[in-house]
Length: 510
Image (tube, rainbow, N blue to C red; front, side, top):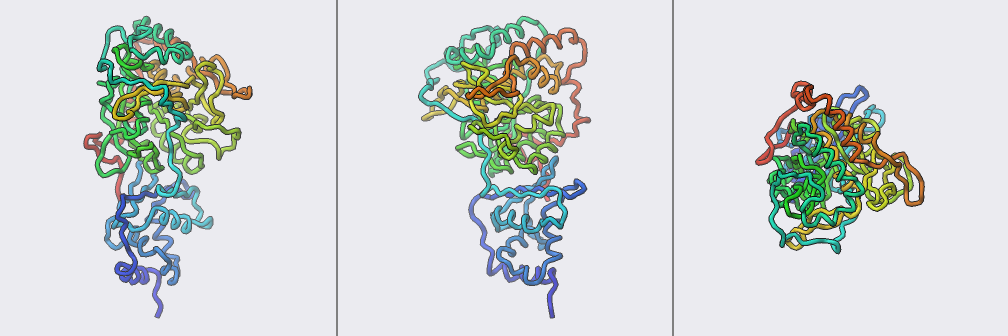
């Protein structure tokens, strides 16, 4: 008498409960699975499991770890959480739990085993949170030796009395004067303040480590957000400081006798926390969950700031493309990696930066020297939209329990500065994301070059010219319907969820 695969499944599972399964007591591990058949249809990991089991031999069922996989994906009645992301249809499998007592690496090993070429999947990938490299913030260096204590200064707060007066009265503004001169911020502010056109607050979603909303220079600017970190208790607290630093570069309150000044005055922020890691590292599952949560959960986001980078893969590029294609009414600003490289082979490029090639609403910014705005700081990402002066950019971090302003250098800062300039332009409420990108690109005045004098095709940003062009576009059209009014829920097919606090996942569960 021989047992078929399904009978073996039941028998083996019953005995293995006693002999094999040990529950991982640590926090959940995650495997991110992306399967697409030749017709472009997404395939679920449980469906893959069923197909694989149906063609297994009796002996195959005795392979190590099958008891755990059967408990994860079998039909025994045990609950297993598989999050299906609404847009990309990626699935995030919660492993290392009582319901799925295998590691994320073991799940990915199964996926790679179960998807040979003969099965004809167009895309198939599985990324293990525990074994794959992490996404990292793209700031390259932080220089504590140039820091300034903020604890002895007056507390910050809103100041709406001539907020774009240059130079502002912020006591440490002199530390960023050289940067603002390189960016020609004085003229950009003057044009904005003197045009007398109606303006609105621009909302920026900050896909990062969270935001410390009690930082005095951000009081009144931080809205509800979303925690994509996957920790049991949702929070927007910034355990690393990178998200708070990027937010401050964009929109620290101008002219409030505290700290420094941001690029733009009319701005609010929605924190999308990717990670609670104290070093700012985020996994693929956290990044994808956060990106979809931002796009699906908030209908008022105008700009999405993503100062993170991941190594290029075609599967991840496809998934990101599906996600971004769903919300082309949002301007996405990202950055290249802050490291040196001389190769331009696709496998050495980074995501989501590379998508600037294919989307009219995606900008990738890279860092240039503040004292030489046409010289690149790094050669890691020569394929970008804009070069942006961003060395020694003052940003807040907590050091020994106190706020310090610390010079930051890297592509993260270049993305934050670009987001600030874009927000200035969008505050006139007539420009689409495509308009903003076109203006920023066509108003550059020089091509960035590498330190060894190789010229690139990346232009250097000119905020003053970009704002001037935005005002010109807005002036004769003040009577037309604003762009924000044209962004309706019907044409975006949004799925809403409750923001923090307490918040919940904008994800379907199977």
